[in-house]
Structures are given as structure tokens and as C-alpha cells.
Image 1 (cartoon, rainbow, N blue to C red):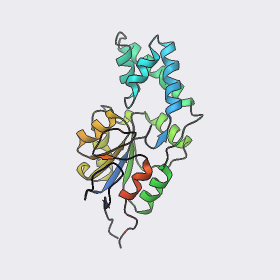
Image 2 (tube, rainbow, N blue to C red):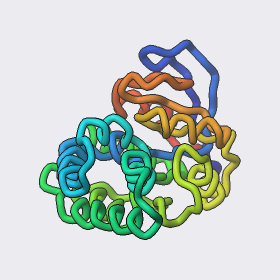
Image 3 (cartoon, rainbow, N blue to C red):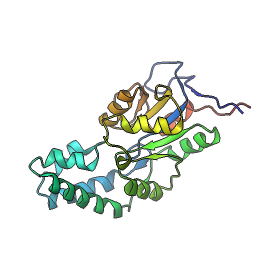
Image 4 (cartoon, rainbow, N blue to C red):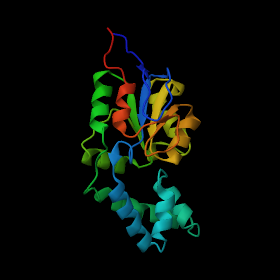
Length: 224
């Protein structure tokens, strides 16, 4: 059985027509595979009140970044021990606030297509292992490979997570499609050398409105 790479044989809405091919798909989690917006905002607003930070300023800078990076940005006065404490405090609240975490539009359809065609794919997220598994489970989403923040030395916008995922899958990162919803994630995907699809109007190599628009990039059949 020969696996057929994904071929973009028709333009995705908002993109120019291209003959781009992909050997694997690497997906961000929050805002991409999982709609966790309400939970994320609640947890950061609550954290800001506990740690004497401006909630709006926190929300302005947190998207796509690991929790520790956000803590450092909004409380640059904290020493290393306090940064670690503040990060743990935030994560402990996120682990249990899963009330309205759901699959993003098109997520189940895309995963079904990836699995039906044996397309290699992975989730690459700024969340740590416990939080990523909790949110993916709450959303009812299965996954073959997970590259969370605690598996890499440097989080997004560093490309390490995407490079690690491509290595796990045994594919060349330059043949991968990365799907992201934030500027930080797009930067990470591009720095790794992948083609990047941007959700939520995020400028990238390909523009997609939802994951429904990513499905046509995956071949319908596996050739024998």
C-alpha cells in the first residue's frame, strides 16, 4: 500500500490556487482543534486577580504562548521562584475548568479524513501534557501523537515543537502542513519550514475559515 500525499488541487477560500503537496498535518490545539476560548479567558482573568495583574493586558498577550511566558510578560518583577509558583497556580485552575471545552468546528470531520487516509498527523500545543490531554478528552478528540510544552525545551514561537513532531512522524518538516490560529503559532510553523494555514484571519501561507476548509487538502483515498 502506498500512502498518497495530500494535494491542494483546488483553492481554499481566501487563498491563491496552488499545487502544494503535504506528507503530514500538524495541528495546534487551543483555538484550532479545541474551542477553549471561554475556559482560557476565565482562567487568566481569575489568575490576574490573584496575582495583581491587569486582566485585559494578560488577555492581550497570552494567545499562543505557554503559561510561563505569559506570566513573565505581565509580571516581569517576579523572580524565578515566583514565576514558577504563578505558573503552577494558573495551570492548576486550568486543569479543572473544562465545563465548556468542545471540539472546534470541523475537528471531527478532519480527524476522520486523516485517519481514513492514513495521513500522519500530530497535535503540537503550548499546553503541558496534563492540560492538553484534559482538553482533548473533554472535546472528545482522539490523537495519535501529542507534542506538548513540557516535551520541548522552547515553546512557541520557537519551532522546536513542530520540528519534534515531524521527527516523531518520520517526515520532512518542509512537506508538512501546520494549522494555527495565532501569530505566535504561525511564526513557529514558518520558522520550522512548514507551510502554514491560518485560522481566525491570522495571516499565513493559506487562509482557512474553519477546519472544514482543511479537509479538502487531504486525499479522499489511499492508493494500493
